[in-house]
Image (cartoon, helix red, strand yellow):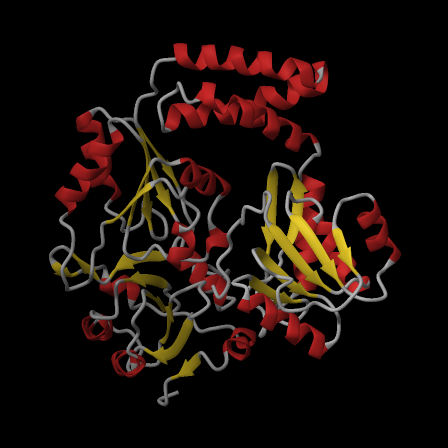
Length: 466
């Protein structure tokens, strides 16, 4: 993030615009919505600028900006569409200690003006770091369609009511009050009875919320999928946004954690393969402690019911009498198969699919090797990189062909996904050469679809033995 988004208080402060033509008009339309004192300097002023000056909405000097004109200004815009005049405006503004901007000149500007959706006092700013203004305008248009004009009326009434709502304790109870107002009864009362009835509804809702007993804590055990935030379920997104406490695995990526409220407590309980890790007992205690009094989401990579130690955490919650729910996620096997455009089952090839782990609490995991070694058997193997030599040995001892296809997918569904296609014989060497750092799913008996191979280049790798 090159530009940090902030909202600058312009009440009573000076904003200087160098330029009075068409380019300046576009910025002035926006600036006139603020409470700033606006000064415009430029020759050949646009008729609109002169009208605004005649109405007393801004001060117009029909000459070029000079040193001293930007004294005490908060911002200075160069809107002359003339490189020399704009450069001079920036020099004058910076000498006066103001933030400076040249319209459509990202490199020489100290700040940029975003596209804005105005539902005063609700303001949404949209920026693309100057990379795609047309995209910002499209997002703006979409948001304006979604947000009714009445939203601003409700927000202004709610703003005046905030001191009374502060009688509610900070946290969930206060959030519930405002959620009921803005997304429930507020719009209904405004629509059916008009603006005058809305304050009475706020008082009624406040009394009702004060009388409510505190909700008991609750835990949602959520599968976040393999890492792509767009693969989260709608329910998972909603619960994550509402949570008081977020407890997450090491493999849950930052873009998903960004969906949590800024005020939420976020705790990582990482488990590093063959390295330092949280003990499961300590994780259980943490979930229970917060779950007694708070809305907790426990985020697990993939699906919580597949190699996620789900039963241990459910047992701890049951023992403590803490209510919980399970929200399934897309497991890595499904996402990885989709990424290489293959089906996990296929008529005439395999009528069953094994999902197994290469490593469990006792070490390398034993399986029904004879059945897995049969021609056309398909298995999705989790945590199998370190166990690759063990897996190859067990399978080949039980009759698996050395040219059985094996496909490894690292970071399935993410932008840094990598596909390594090899054979059972060469699997350990191919994985060692690839040296994956992220989570890997191994597919025994599956090769990438030819179209997927082409789409993955250059991330796609093929073992030399093939």
